[in-house]
Length: 136
Image (cartoon, rainbow, N blue to C red):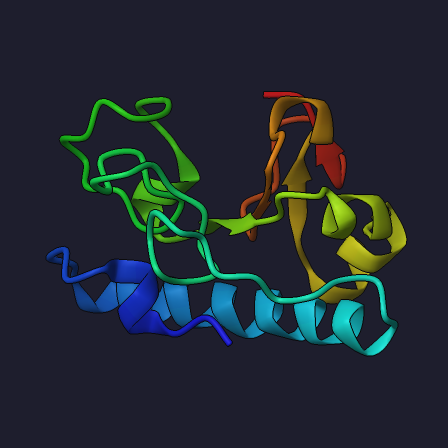
């Protein structure tokens, strides 16, 4: 289970960001639990982060919360709003199992699997296209 502490990784954040992260993590953990129960995914710890959240060594490009000052990702990244997380998915089994029906069931959106090799980007923030699976 991905926790708020793992998501924020001791980075300063405010109460609104905590609320956004809690909502995100409830949805993401439920989706992952469903994938595990279906036998489609095994929770795996990323060697760089020590959690199920994907990230680079040293944490500068981690897939959890990102500070507004980070150079990782886009300036308006949903990670900076505590509305997105990158799940460590080295064999792409979670990506392969997810479809738009599952995303809709959990109130989530994902970045195109072709753009997220080795991780699954999940967010509560709808993209401009409002498609469940989107290209940034």
